[in-house]
Image 1 (cartoon, rainbow, N blue to C red):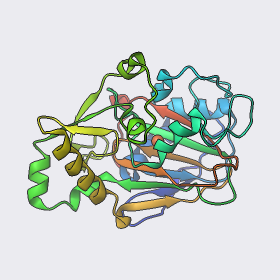
Image 2 (image 1 turned 90 degrees about the vertical axis):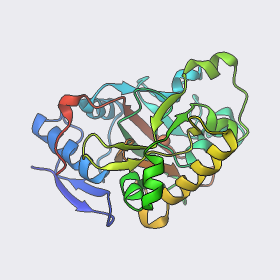
Image 3 (image 1 turned 90 degrees about the horizontal axis):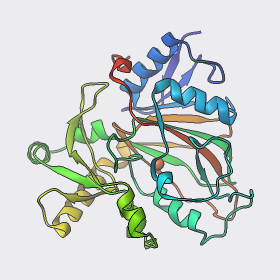
Length: 293
Ligand SMILES: [Fe+2]
């Protein structure tokens, strides 16, 4: 059965049907999904619970996997495969973490608008997040389309941003939130990455405005001016008309392109269990670029 798509938002994001994610992915299906990702930036698959190995197998059909910030931590893990990133408030023993646990303190940064691993080179291509246990309320994930954000910029800002680059740093968001108990070795483990503020999305050929909270400095500008400018651009990029809010159900998998979108988690009752698993594709090999559907 071929991939079918129902748009979820006027600008981007679609619900996807017709492919069984638990089975090895046929080459034709992978091409169709890549083409749909290039057009929509976010695909939502409903009602397909995945085991941990099934999630890893599906994700790695799209390129090598990366674990992002997990490289910095030496925390005990509860998931079976090191390529799975535990987006939960649950500790290694399976208990809901205390409000002020290091894991929660780090996770709160996920509630700020970001592109996964924009602080490293290569930066992440796709992320896939799968819902296992959900709280009674809250905890949506919101997505914003950076191509729409670029299209809506004033002409003078488009021209100015086209000349600028920003430095993205792995621990910037954590430090911003007051979680600064990191060693020098951790701070140096992932060198900052620099990305042009405007660049062309490889899969669709559309220009986009690449901002997000990992960006801490416009290259060549004073820190304070950089931060207010980056904050203004982020506010522009995340206006409600550019945002799709995903309300999770158990068994959902949401797949997004970090090179075309930003995302953030939303607040939920922190004493209630919330378990999602992420897999992130490090980069999409050139051979996998399919024309937008
Ligand atoms: Fe994220």
